[in-house]
Length: 242
Image 1 (cartoon, rainbow, N blue to C red):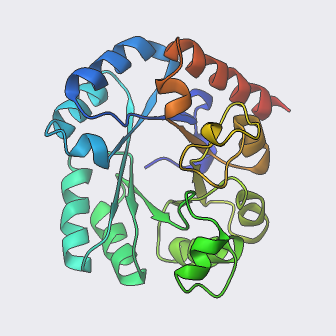
Image 2 (cartoon, rainbow, N blue to C red):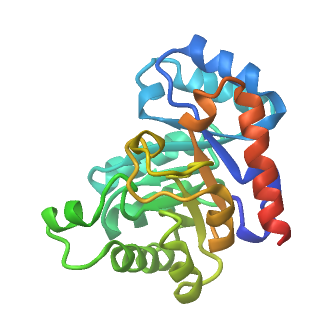
């Protein structure tokens, strides 16, 4: 299992391999080469029918795997799914559920795979949280879920970089934070945000205390994806050196 004090700098960039087919995925992996060491395999690619085929190819070439499947079911079913994933050499897996689901996942994952608790999706804003019935703001919700997740044995949480400073101040420093909603260049154009509402640049997220940054479209749709990934790697390295 990855521990917070032993994260290689170039492992901190996690590329979201959100494509529909194996051919698309393999083409991107070839293009990115050494610029990406850590891959997120989510629901879109899971439905391609080639999830574990690609997973084994990536592991065979020395890459790390984040299975972002946001498991949510009765504890026994979540545990069974986690055991399956752990047997394939997955480094991180997301679970989106209550304490019993998280506890079952942690036990099933053992020492080989880190369980990441989903706190509040970065596509949600305060209006969404109000509609869902949460009687708190996003930051309070993330803090509450992070404390519970760590107490249950989770390796870390998925959280917007905006909430990471409070996590670093108020939650055990062993907690790993995986941060989506990363945009290398921000302006007022909605297209830069995509589906995300709470976003940050890579440098700001690292400065806030984030451990891993999940980046998808800014790399995937760039004219030169490898160059885009290397630019982010350099930004991460510079932020760590500050």
